[in-house]
Image (cartoon, rainbow, N blue to C red; front, side, top):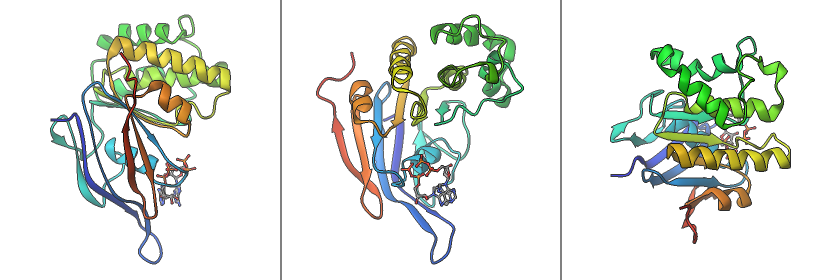
Length: 226
Ligand code: ADP
Ligand code: ADP
């Protein structure tokens, strides 16, 4: 069975005259180890779909299963990276990386080496004790990547993770991300506006669109990653 299974999922946010229909009906599956990009115009429901897969936003109808069990809330097998790093400003880089471990009530000491290793992999060795205000935007987003991976989730969800960065930092982030994925073999759903980025990183590209919005294209890439 696929690792991620989204079946006829709908989302209507409450509002006047029947609410805002963010997703009309979306179905997709993602196999273990696959890197899938999700493209589509602004407002077509990409973030909403990702939040539902993460268990952070309830579905209006349909169902989502991960690893064979229904998604009903936040889970240990999910890591998520948002557009803004949203680090806790009063905590150090290392403490920010370890934050999901605390939230999930896992033993922090057992994850400390892993947190250091992840920070090293994204080029932040030596910055462990810095506060977010002492780091650049690109560095903060690299801390957010480590935070999403620290608890060793099976599935990594990313919502336009690099869109706030300049072009050079963005390219460097894509390289760092590729290296991390080669080491840790995660299953990824990646929301982006960049067709170039999607083509560079993905095994398969999904496009959302239409009104009301659905998945209108599901296209394997001709040269999947090794
Ligand atoms: P995106 O970059 O994905 O297009 P938006 O700028 O549309 O993001 O939304 C940013 C945040 O605001 C998201 O957390 C989203 O859930 C929330 N949001 C977007 N539209 C509305 C709305 N109409 N009412 C309330 N919250 C919204
Ligand atoms: P995308 O990520 O593709 O830009 P979103 O999922 O952010 O799209 O938004 C899809 C639609 O749902 C938009 O019309 C947006 O304004 C609306 N929306 C998003 N979040 C909320 C929210 N929390 N409350 C109400 N409407 C929202």
